[in-house]
Image (tube, rainbow, N blue to C red; front, side, top):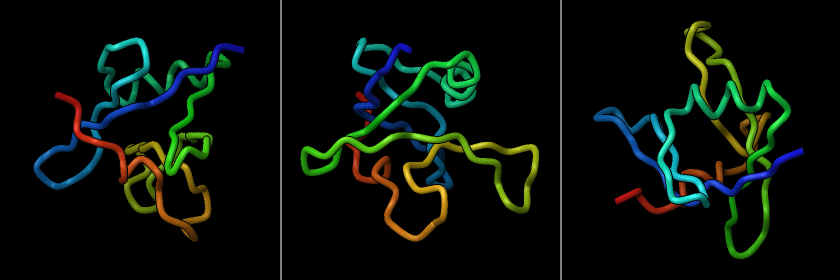
Length: 87
């Protein structure tokens, strides 16, 4: 299984993460990352040096909308929120 690190994020005007930067130096729309997950690729992010897996999750009200998170149960902070903006 190929594993890639998410190193930065791009947010829209509402603050939602729309794209992520990977350790390959490229920026990808989150749906591309989600599709790669479906093809058995995994992603992680780091906070304070600790590696956390990234998951795709469907929005609880807007079922057609998907997002990336490091917390499936919304009980801890999403590590992606602490990543820098992609430049």
